[in-house]
Image (cartoon, rainbow, N blue to C red; front, side):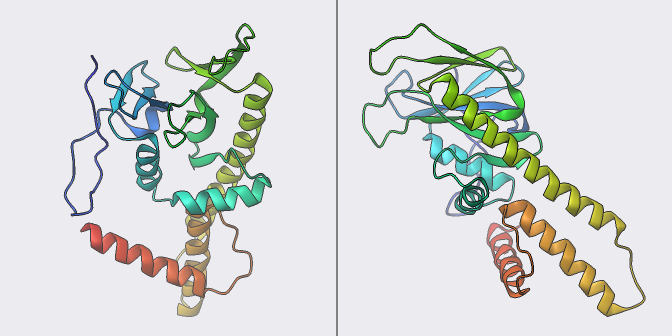
Length: 241
């Protein structure tokens, strides 16, 4: 039986729990699992062909991953829901190499158990249709990922491809925002005028905000970014970083 592993995150009291035995950038998929003991746990698949087990629910694992990339799960969903103009199946672009696409992966015992897992768009290879069946809960497709992983899905091939298409749109937007931030950051040099320095600094900060939240600020007042920076500072102070 594979060992249960945890992500190295801060708990409510500020102390860290056991280290995870994988890197987030190596994750190709996370899948809800009832585990050998029947608990509601999570399986994590990596690019190295390994499968790790976490005894937390998938939602807790997902929030840990999103927080690691200094993003907010609720805001990310809200902003990409608006960008893609869709209500369900919102992809989560966390980095240019990690774009989590939600896929229905299992039948549930209880409606609160959660049937959705996530695959990394970057590690997706192909989807194949299994023999049709009218029996409830049986897989309709197999999703093939890097690391020689094959995961089952209760979605049709058409539904999976639609969600992957949304994932590509989200990935492109994330990369555009990131490139704009990087290019502006590298091109801004110290100026004799303090006013010019502050102006460029605000532009960089705004781009950084857009990168992490997925929200396009446009010509909004600087108060939003200022409040956001103060909140981030408080969070870092609370974590002792």
